[in-house]
Image (cartoon, rainbow, N blue to C red; front, side):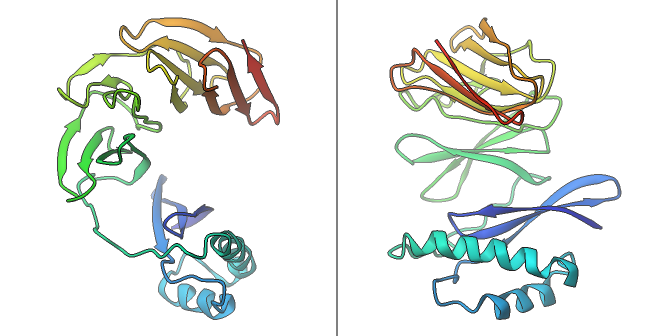
Length: 239
């Protein structure tokens, strides 16, 4: 196994490890639910290294810096206490993303197993599995104004696929609905963003100009302006 990268998870606090095993990229998480402003970071890193062989001595300082950054963030929200409520195990491969609906009553997960799963937040019960993708599901979103959409756009009420969005030539890394819920915005590794009709799945516009992958995109609160962020170190505003 070869460690590739670390990712911080602020809420609930933890570290995500990306590693390669037999040529396949995998992830695992280290929960840090007891981390607080007074935690001895050096001692904590020693404990983590004893339990996790992926974190070798050469990675010690890097892990310390990450945990210190997480510690500072938690210090800004010192009234938050985290408890492990329930462990959900249904996907057969690691998760890629999670999204809550507006009320928080349910949430959806995407996975390397090419499925999305809908869950009841209060009970942790799996409500449904959304199938149809032929590759990893990297990005998911709820159509929060109406609480009934993800993409491939599925209805959270009927569990049926409403529309299939086709046109990007690379992986979709970000999805966002406009506040009105009738438009869907996607950002991709093909260096473009696309605006779609959320009911029909028709591509309405292609936003071109970035020279690298678009990793973030969103509508403003009126839904008439789009902003995109890219690995080319620029943000672009579109009207």
